[in-house]
Amino acid sequence: MTPTPLTEVPWNSPCSPRCGFRIDAAKHIPAADIAAIEDRLTEPVYLYQEVIHGAGEPITPEEYTANGDVTEFRYGRDLAKIFDHEKLAHLRTFASVLPSEQAVVFTDNHDTQRHGDVLTHADGRTHELANAFMLAWPYGTPRVMSSYAFSDPDAGPPTAGSGITEDVDCSAAAWQCEHRQPRIANMVEFHNVVQGTGVTGWWDNGNDSIAFGRGDRGYLVLNDEDSALTGRSFHTSLPAGTYCDVFHGRVTATGCTGPTYTVNAAGWFRADVAAHDGVALHAGANVG
Image 1: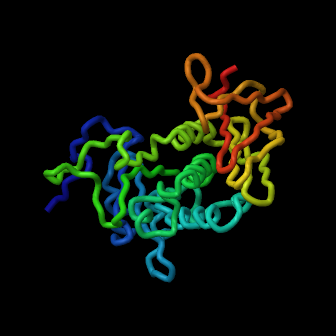
Image 2: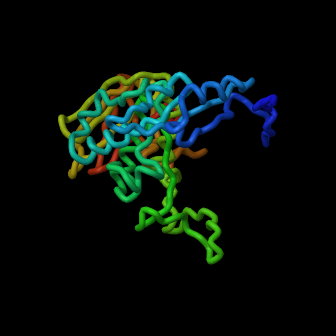
Image 3: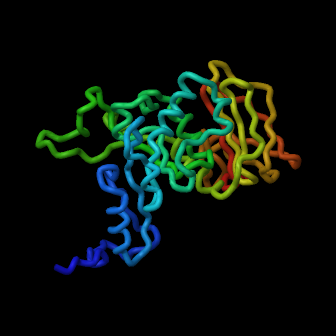
């Protein structure tokens, strides 16, 4: 029997380098078998594999990196541990086990938000701050969770009387829509703008206030203290200009819907940051 080439599977639109696959439960498929399937593809695709790390288990995420990217479940647990029980200052060298260029990272996903020690939408502002850090930090390929509310871990999404899943309505309490929350959604643009740059100008107060730049493309301040961070100036590598704080607003044709900050010729700007809040500036948000 001659196997059907995988390229004969019809696509809804012409394939491009953006085509790709997520392999669910890849851990239950030998890495060599996935490699054999991948070898039959005649066009380049993006591939990432769900491989959940389990302490002491014989199958590890590292076995699958030769095939493509791999989910790094340890990332969300380690990030939550720092936000919940340690100090944000410890994030200075934050990374997980997989190589950065092959790790798919997330604060939470549909499994861990039910059965894991991670931050979820139920953690409110802390969850937003953690996502902001993930999207600003140069480790892994970040993935943002978008979910629905639940009290029973086994509950499915909101459904109509017929049992059919209802259309998503981000104005309804049943749908969390984390990807639409401004402090997360705007940081996706930050992530895209700063790609390819390293961390510069790290600062922390030894506890739960941190700040760092991404080359001359962006700068993030996070204050997870119970009190405001006041009377401080921050040094960046951003060009001089007035920047929209995308943590609280977005760029419009006429300026910014939130506060703005002026970076002087020496790279300094002054900001007071409320408790459990932040400031995010990037080169694409220079409004004057």
